[in-house]
Image (cartoon, rainbow, N blue to C red; front, side):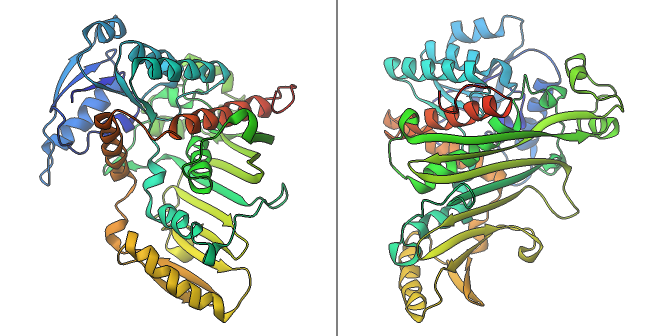
Length: 433
């Protein structure tokens, strides 16, 4: 297979090339506008090629003319297009790639507003008609504690049944905390100025929550084909800004002044209000769920992005925590609803089933609860998950099909996020109109 990278503007584009892939040509065609986004991408790939341990061997052929999109569509230089960058034109890029008959692996979010969602629906229909695959990069499915949470939730003797929950106490809760300033591939990340513009990057409600809504669907309704019009009811959504000082903005972007497109979000005191935070309360097939994302500027010393997750079952709750007690690493706990000796016996039997899929996983008693311990080899880190997503997608391309539930699931997911944004912004229509 031959890869194309179209308008790389997010470091996720480079992370997909942090490893090589069997049966993929080392020559990659890149189409983009000249500028700092492209320069950052090229520098990262060069770093991967030059590293001492397991270096990559990518050969990049780059075209930077103003007509890069037309040239990309006309030349059709590859089989699979990687799209990870400014989200303002992502729907347009996806549409052009699909109409040119190429498979697309796109960074999230593939839609940041209602118009983008409608365009995405058309792109999926066109992809089906042309026999090409369109897919987004859901790295969080590959995180070991999430995999184990899903695995234990499939064991009725331990988890029981997923409760319906309520708006006051949802059955599923997923919370994510991210940071504008952090390390990527061992170096401080440089954010483009447009990353802070909701018209180009999208608000938090349609960005990181894409992962969280995806996990709700993937864990709670695995292999099931969802219909958003029938299965999803949004009860409420809200949004609020992260306040960023001029010095913080300069630190992470290396820009000494706010670009003009951010002026509308700059306050009288000079701070920037970036609407990166949000929360969605909704029901999916009768199960109450809540997802929320919060962006801070920088993590405390020794910390990074964090994840909190709860699945409430009739027999036990499955909880992922990542606080100080967990040394800031994600840890899965099994918390039985009723404290019985029968539960301990059932858990011992269930562990053997889990170990068939994940050898080496163990349990540690912690009061009335249990901590699930995965060997270090499973904790490969977020950056490695991009390679795992790419390998899985390339396998689907070779096979010629995605699982039948994936496309309906993506459509349901982007309906949830884009409609929630409308509600949070004050759209007066009924939540599911």
